[in-house]
Image (cartoon, rainbow, N blue to C red; front, side, top):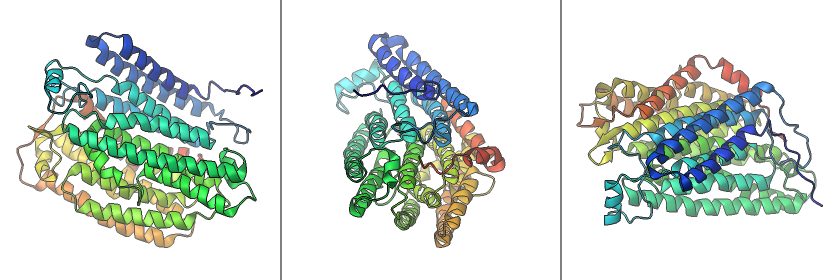
Amino acid sequence: MIPAPDLDYALLAPLLLVAAGALAGVLIEAFCPRGPRFAVQAGLAFAVSLVALAASVAVYAGGGFGPADQPGRTVLADRAAVLTWIALSAFALLGVALFADRRADGGLSAFTGRAADRPGSDEEAEALRERIEHTEVFPLGLFALLGMMLFAASADLLTMFVALEVLSLPLYLLCGLARRRRLWSQEAALKYFVLGAFSSAFFLYGAALAYGYSGSFALDGLGAPGGEAELRVAALALMAVGLLFKVGAVPFHAWTPDVYVGAPTPVTAFMAAGTKAAAFVALMRVLFAAAETDWKPLVAVIATTTMLVGSLLAIAQSDVKRMLAYSSVAHAGFVLTGVLDGDAAGVLFYLLAYGLASMGAFAVVALVRDAGGEATAAARWAGLGRESPVLGVSFAVFMLSFAGIPLTGGFIGKWAVFAEAASAGYAWLVVLGVLLSAVAAFFYVRMISVVFFADPDALTVASGARLTTGVVVLAAVGTVILGIVPGPVLELVQQAGSLVP
């Protein structure tokens, strides 16, 4: 007889609340009339994200974390997991605000009215005329949040795989729901789905091989002594492929620019911040548990190529969203340098700083518009700082944070991960990272120059989009606070430990 699981409902409260909210959203979608449905779904998603944030803070403040040595556990609510829950819930709050803003584009959200309508068809025109909106995006976003939270707290490989699919499937759908440039959006969703399915298959195959040599799906089984060395290496390599795909590391990054550009910008913002945070924590759990395998040299090579490819390709971009996509690739490389020390502190801080700046930068993209929708051509951003000083200054803060300039969260984050790489004996990688940070600073400073010093272009700023503007301001303030007063957050992440079960 299979024994009943022993659940600590207090520790699992954030996960359970998000799951309940997502299921409630499905019921609302089925039974709530169309008129008030958008407001009800948006309000529910915001409330669930806020309650999940409060519950995560309460779990961390309570200090009663789950035992790390409990046999048969599948979810590990340790300090790193709970801190990641807090960050993900905060990203979800900002993401819901972006999803719900209908002032940026003609009184409708960024999502298409009916996904089944063929682009350019009479049915699509009818849906636009009747102002039909996809309200399923809110429960889909909550399901993605649930998968991210479970992904970061998984203590065995099967749970990690289930969490990977729970976070991925809603994002595949959301990427194809853009109201404008729908063919690009559908292409992005298809590419993300096909490549994501391959990466999931790699991860699952690796988990099967891990079970073959250890006889267990538990993460601590990855470091079990004995077993076939070939199976051990193959299992870790295959699982790393699936996880490195999610973080957008080279050579598994090819999906990133097309998906980031084609997806609705609110989805891009949420995905860039949340998926990267959850996937890096899961990656660290797998790597740190596989202590018998010397994975650090290979990770150092991947970090090097990722920083190099992301930084160099970002320079050549003339589209702001595509530039931010390649910037995301470069930042995945910077974060990987912090993994080499076997400690999660620097990585967690970097993920928080990058997530805030990334969400803020994409929120600015959603507000800069022309007659065809979002004006993503970099040349069209000329004079944004004069047209809207708030957006211009905020965007400059995000660019400076990406570049790692002092007094921003990005500077502290890079200092933290580079310090960990140096302590692990990879000083050469730190030198290379600093040099590539200087290269990356070129296109960030170039965007600031366009925004403030180029001759103004005939652009339009969606000044009435209060929710999106609020996300921009909150993200900018958070980025500056992390740069000026990083001490409290650094103290929290330094308690996260090495993530070893």
